[in-house]
Length: 535
Image (cartoon, rainbow, N blue to C red; front, top):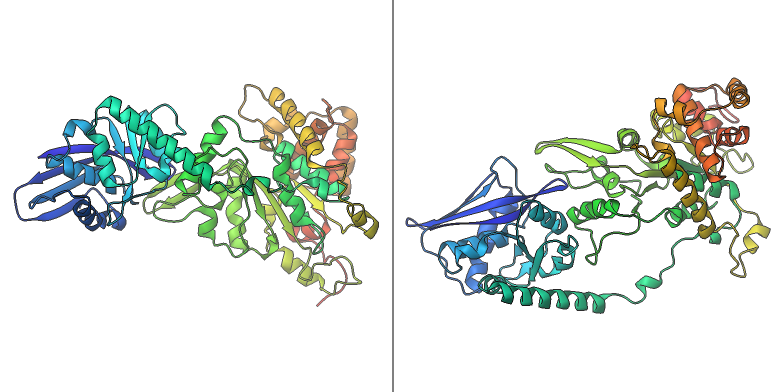
C-alpha cells in the first residue's frame, strides 16, 4: 500500500515542505530509504523500527520503501523520523491515510518511542503555512516555538503513540487536544522559569565612571551603525564599555524579530519558545576558527557573523585573533551578508552586524607609556599588524580608553551612577535614529553607516566653510577616498546626535579625532616606526 505525508526539511536558513512517500509491498523483508539522504537520516531506519515495536505497532514483514523528495536536495538532521514512522503505519492501515492529508510532521524518535525536539521548528511551521498545510505535529518541547507563527494549527506530542492517537481523532477532538497541549506547555515553561533570571542587571554605562569621549564614540556607533575599535591599556574598561552597548540599542521590532529568531531556531538556540526581543550580542573567543566564525558543514549552520545579525559582534583582544580569521569579516561588513560555497551548494546568509573590537596597543598593553612599556617599535607594529589594513579601513570609529583616575573611581563608591548612563545615551540614540529614518524614508539605507559613496556625497553635503575646513584637515593628515567618505558619515551621525540638520566644522573636527591613531596608520600605510627604539 502507498501513503504520503509532509515533513519539515531544512536547507541552510530556509525550510521547505518535503514529501515523504512510503510503499509497503510483498517481498523479502527490507527497509530502504532513498532521496539523497545524509547519514543521520539513513540511520533512522533502526530508530524507527525499534520505536514502532515499543509503541505497540506491528512492523510489516515485507518490503518497505521510503522516498523523501525533492530528491535533488541533500537532506540531513533527525526531523524525518516521525513523519516516516507515521507514513509506515498509514501504509499498513494502522492510521487512515486521509488523516495525514494537509499535515506536516517533524521530530526525532527515541528507541522507547519518545518524540525528541529538533532544531528549526519555527521555519518549518512557516514553510508549512506557505505550502498551504492545515496543521503541524511537532515534539512537545518545540510546541511553543511552533506557535510563534500564529496562523496555523500546531500540536505537540511527547510519544509516537500520542501522535497516532491524535491523528485518529476527529477535528473537534483534535482541537481540544491541541488546546490541552498548549496549556501544559505554557504552564511547564512558567514553572521552569528561574525567578532570579529576570533580575539580572544589564550592563549600564552609568556604572562606568568618566570616559565621556569613549561613551560618545559608543553612542555614535549605536546611532549610525558604525563599526568601533576601542584601544587602551589592560583594565582601562574597554570590555565593560563594549558590553554596555546593547543597553543603548533599540529593541528588535516587527520583521527583525522573526528574521533573527529563525536564525537562532535553525541553530537550535531559540530559548523558551519566544521571539527574540533584544539584539544579539555575540562575543567569540580569540581562538575561534574561520569555520565557526563564517559557518561550517556541507549545509552550513549559522556562524558567529550570522548569529550576530542585527546585533553586536564583539571581538575582545582583537589583535590576538588570527589575521586570516579576521579577514573573513571584510565582505560581511561591506555587504551585510556572507557567501558560503560548500559541497551541498552555495548559501547566502545574512550578516549585518555592528562590529565592536577591543585591543591593547602593544604586546604588554601599555604603549605609548614608556615608563611602563618596553616594546620596540617593530614589536608594536607586528602586534597590531594582525589586524589587516583593509579591515582597519572598514572601521569607522577608533576610541581611546584611558584609565580613570582615583577620584573618578571613588565617585561610584557610594553606588552613585555617572550622569552619562544608558538611559540618557539611549534617548540620544533613538532620537538620532528617528532623524535618519525620516531622512532615508523610501530608500533601503536606513542608517548613516550604510551609505555608499554616491549616497554619502548626496546626504552629507557641506557648506563652503565646512569644505575649506575639511581640506585643511586633510592637508594635515592625507587619507584615501574611502576614509574621506567614512569621516563624512561619522560627522553626519554626530550632527544627528546633536539634533542638527547641517554638518558643522565641530562635527568634522570630532569625526577627524575618531580616525585611527598613529600606530594604526603606520600598520595600514606602512609608515615610519612608531615610538621609541629599534631592533
